[in-house]
Image (cartoon, rainbow, N blue to C red; front, side, top):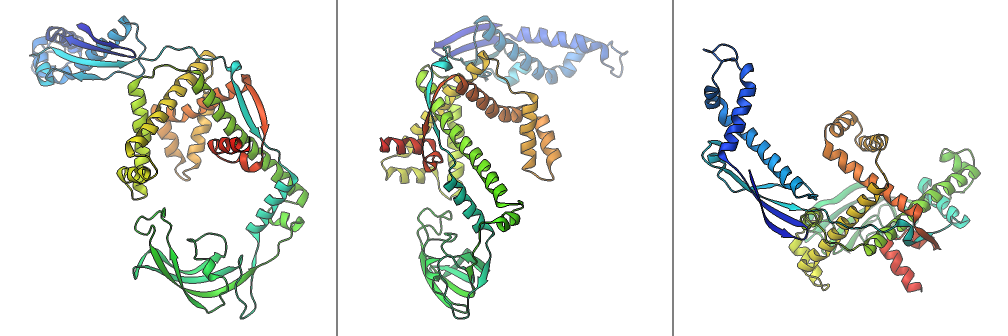
Amino acid sequence: MQITETANENLRREFRIVIGAKDLDERLSGRIVEMQPQVHLKGFRPGKAPVSFLKKTYGKSMMSEIIEAAVQESVQKAVTDNGLKPAFPPRPDLVSDLTQVVEGKSDLEFNIKIDLMPEFDVVDPAKLKVEKLVAKVSDEDVDDALKNLAQQVRTYSDRAEGESSENGDQVTIDFVGRVDGEEFEGGKAEGFQLTLGSGQLIPGFEDQLIGVKVGDTRSLDVTFPADYGAEKLAGKPAQFEVTVHAVKRADEVAIDDELAKKLGVDSLGTLRERVRDQMKGDYVRASRLHVKRRILDALDEAHGFELPPTMVENEFNAIWKQVEDELKSEGKSAEEEGKSAEEEGKSEAELKDEYRAIAGRRVKLGLVLARIGEQNGIQVSQEELNRAVMDQARRFPGQEQQVFQYYSQNAAAQAELRAPIYEEKVVDFIAELAQVDERPVSREILFLDPDEAAEKLKEQQ
């Protein structure tokens, strides 16, 4: 076995490995000698078939296993002898003609590329300074939430005969939509209940039904939004023929004990406390989302080291595939998205550069969080993993057993569940040690995306 280093550049090593045909033949002979006592062949006493005959009979079929074992052994030797820490298992790039190798006519020769884990020191979590956005649940917030609950259970009563609809009324309608004079899929319904002003249908539709009466027929002219999900309809003008069957006004809903009982609670006081507790939980989760982002930003800024190129490329490919899948579901291509972005000053190539930067950030933070977790003994327990599997099973009623079996037999699937749990545990560990300054903000800012919230807060300074 010959192992020759052919490249040594930063985080990448390359090797040329040659395993002689004689070496492989000796491995094959040794394997056949091991199996000889168990072989029963017609014409030979049990375990007495000659090695040469067994090699001729089984040699080719066994050689694939011999080659695979030899490759794994040589790769491991290259890693161990050179004290390397691979970022992920290297894959051999075969140089020899495999058929010739199996037939014993050629040496086994292949190349391997090994991306290495970078060496770096992690920042002391106690030295990180991050901002935590917080907000208090006010009585006004609880009142608004109760009003929303009341809206959800409110009833409607028929308006007086000949009375016209108003914003907030519920109308029952039949409609048929046409684009360029042709009906389109999903553009027809009967007995459809619509609350005017709810924004349930495309812009302009509901506005034109304010003032209708039972029995009215109206022709509505609307235009589908440019970003409408169905590409064939996006930006197109359409006409809807609408027939009104019922017009109902919203009944008044009092926020009292009766409302609480409708919602399964014994009194309004109890309902208020439950709503407040629910909102507190929502506020805590929103606040945690912001502090997590700030921690990740701080870790990103505090660490600068070279990243394994293949690891970054694999992450980028996964991100870009997700982008392409989403575009495909919208009836678009990456090229079309690039042209659309170019109108805003970004080409498709520039978009890919942005996603590569995101991929690099993800890889860097993944390595940093893994190192911090490793240094501090953070692990995902079997109980935590089991709870995650249970959560997945609940998403597929009636198929729980299949879900359990899938995860129990699939180590890669378990790893996918374990990764986000591990990340959350490490982030929580850092948050306990870091210098966290609370910043009171409004409810509106608290529930913004972290990047949007940061922009809003900059504007307010």
